[in-house]
Image (cartoon, rainbow, N blue to C red):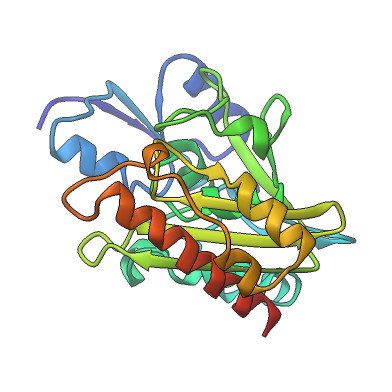
Length: 263
């Protein structure tokens, strides 16, 4: 193993200083540590955020739920506040990876990494969440910028994510059986401003599906979703599934998500 230094700050301000000095932030470690083991990442300094208590926790306000960046997936899934206000988000968290991943992985780490098949980006984008950082607030529509790319700047930390409470919402994914990531995942949310639909697992990053949003805005039914085709040329194909297969799954998962939201 190569040499690196390890820092475990107890205050957010200290973590920011270390990050701005070039330290690599460690949240749940579900991606970074695996990358280090494979020699795909070799940071000179790790900054463990696990002791920064102000970055964890869940708060329910009028019309929104705010989740601290270091809140574990298992805690989101088990939260009575999240279950009551946005049950689809609690269910999403409860379906991430396996029990060990949910016990260690964090919402902030997932959104900062922005894996193209991760679940949380779909929830954040479909619900119109706001990513709160150490310097600003970023709308989900502006935050996700493609394959492992986000609007975060060097040394900028996610501190929390604020989710507006929708009228109804649901998330359905078709799991890749080995990794448990979404081969295709579709999150639908009906809000006062209209319907938002986010798709993960199909492209170079999470994206909104304009066709499904338009159809479901007129009629929030599985039948309306069934009438919308997804262009396979806009999706990726690999050994787990062709672009055409993924395009088919988008429609199937969307129909199931709408049916679940209406149940």
